Structures are given as C-alpha cells and as structure tokens.
Image 1 (cartoon, helix red, strand yellow):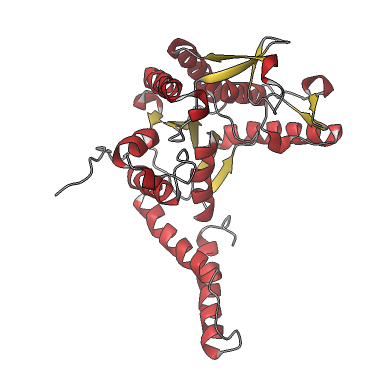
Image 2 (tube, rainbow, N blue to C red):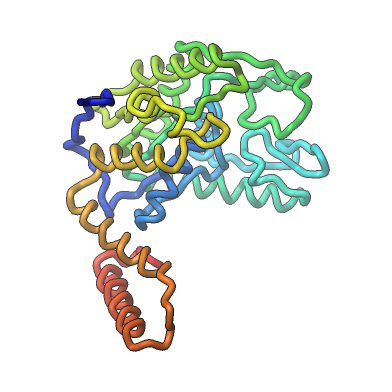
Length: 316
C-alpha cells in the first residue's frame, strides 16, 4: 500500500553541483537551512550577505546595488530602538554604532558583488509576495526593523510585478556572470501572520512568476521545495512546534531530494567521506588516553589530510 504521493523529479543532467561549484544562496530563511547543509558537507558556499531577504524586490535590490557597487552612507540609515538600521538589510547587520553598521553594509555589498561574479550556481529562495512600503519615501523595504506599522503600507506584488523583478534580477546577474546557473525555489515556510488565504495567494504569485521566467536553455531552473512540503509531507508531524516552519525531518527529506536531482555522483561520494569525518569529530570517547582512541584519532586525521589533498578549500 502506498500512503504517499510523490513528485516526479527528473535528474538534472546539465550544470550539476559538484565540489568545484561556487554556490551563492539568497533569500528567505529556508535558503539558510539548505546553506547550512551545504556548509556541513564543506561545499564552497556563501549565503545571504545582507541577511535573510523574504521577497523578490529585496533580492533584486541587493543584486542591483552590489553590481553597481553601492556605497552606503549615513543618509541610508534609520535610527530605531537605540540601534542603527538599513531598510535594505536584515537586522543582523544593524548596530548601536553608526560606523559599525556602515562598515557591515559596505563589506556585505562588496562581498555580494564578488560572489555574484564568481558563482557557478545561484540559488534564490522566495518567501512571500507581501511587501511593506515606507510611506515617508514611498519605497519598498526588505525589513521593517520593528518600526511602527502605521509608517508603512502593506501590499501584495502582482504576478506581473514579480515577473518583471525576476527578469531584472536575472539580467543583472547575467551581465556580470553569463555562465551562472540560477535555481529558483519557493520557501515551504508558511507566512500565516499574513493570513491563511493571503499566504496561499502570496505563494501562488511567486510560483506563477518564477514559471514565467525560467528557461532551462538559459540555465534558469526551478526546484519544488514548496510542493514537496505541501504534497509529499502533508502532515503536521513534519512541522516544528509553531506549525509553520518545516522541522529537521522535513528539511532533511527535501535536502535528500535536492541531492538526488542536482548533485553529481562524484559529489555524493565525497559527501559520504565528509560525513564520516564530521561524525568522527563529534565522537566522545570513554577514555581519551586509550590506545584504541589514539588509533581512532590518527585514522581520522589521515582521512582529513587525504580529503584536503584533493580539495584544498575544505577545512574542519
């Protein structure tokens, strides 16, 4: 008896991810989940230089400003709750010191420019179509930084506007990195604070817009994270206690589907070696001075040296 419907995923035959790939992840908190997995397995990755970005306009804004080498100044900051913030970035970059946040922003924008040019794969995870427009300057922000909601107008981006945003985003990336593979996905995290119906509207706008712009002949693809969560894992046991975020089992399940679809066979073999080492490094012996443990450590060190001889960028 089959108690689950499964999405028919085709194995990606071109532009697969290997240990020679340079991967840049941008977008919602689900991109952080996948980024953490890639980091664990020691791929060459960079994620969210401006922190978590939930909607397409915020990601487009980051890419455009990075490519045009935006220099952040005091006029780009706002002061709230005794901290300096920037509407373009997540609060992770905020600071009580004005100079510190400007250094954070300009360092991040410079890093983003470099990574966009170097990346072989750019994975973009969209979270929501809902955006907040700051009334004072009539601009859409990436993060409200707990500024009173009365200072913003909330609106949903139409499919047409998201399509235009993604087209501009892709054109900008291709202008500095024509060979980059761009992979879109939609976050399975439900934004229920917007409302149940509003969340479905939001996700549907994102999915429709993405499918308006992807073209495999132009190295632009879609991976169905959202659909896997909604269909194959349609049970609350796959959510955390808040019933909104996928739990570790769900993230692992989607990650394994991603590996199946996008990773080279050689990469999968190296991943097994990395995992063996990672587990060995967390091993806690009963007796640190035993001969058995000394042999275990020597064997582990040999595996690390052997792996580093093949991939010099790997560090444990």
